[in-house]
Amino acid sequence: MPAYAHIDDLAARAQAALARLESCEICPRRCGVNRLKDERGFCRTGRLARVASFAPHFGEEQPLVGSSGSGTIFFSGCNLACIYCQNYDISQQDHGKEVSADALASMMLQLQDLGCHNINFVTPTHVVPQILEALVLAVEDGLRVPLVYNSSGYDSVQTVQLLEGIFDIYMPDAKYGSDDMAAKYSGASDYTRIMKTAIKEMHRQVGDLMMDEDGVAIRGLIVRHLVLPGDLAGSAEVVRFLSEEISPNTYLNVMAQYRPEYNACRFPELDRRITLKEYNDVVRLAVRAGLTRGLAIL
Image 1 (cartoon, rainbow, N blue to C red):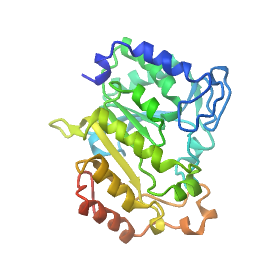
Image 2: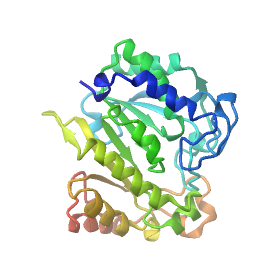
Image 3: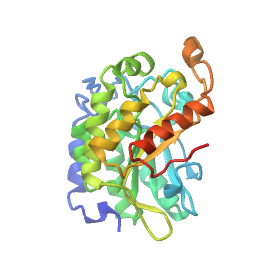
Image 4: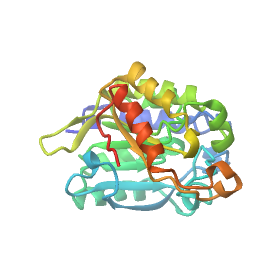
């Protein structure tokens, strides 16, 4: 059974989260706008969440995909402003439509009915209250698969604490090991501190990744790290942090799919694909640090 099946205060937590929208402090931006009155802050999202798409996804990490896919729900808007975002039409240009709690709950149930192993909320950071509000309805109607929190890593630890016992699987990015690069390329000068604090709390809640006999994730932490050209992501510090401050058993997906999208062409250092050597160098860093779960040398 998923973790939330044992939570008896889910509705109360949803209401507590919604109350925090009145002077919004859901994410580290702490914009202070009244989203209950549909005011918009950095994420450009008001009272209702906006969804760009939902469907079984077979391109996620194998422990999430299994044989029947991960049930992804892609939210519009974002609390980062990555100039190379590959989903910029969703994250920055806000393609998608507003959905009620009933509609969001229905999406979860449809994905479960399609046989998905989990419900995978993509870019959930700024819509945690709306997710919890819909989850109450979905659970009442029979939702019973694990939930995945698939975020940029720029998450408020107070909000993550509110989710304890609700999410079985956390899958944050560890985008940068340097705040200078985070400020320059994602508009978040405090990213590394926030990310590290959030991932520590996520790991405290769910521990290292556990899988069933079929290799499908049932609980735990998965971390993604996208390799940038010229080591602009500060990969060595990301690897050190995960190995020394989280766990050498952390499931780490070192990602090779960087390509210069959106506004990356304005920065010459980012206006190219990464090389095979750049990718494998990061994988070798991880291996030397004892991080071997999830790795692949190309």
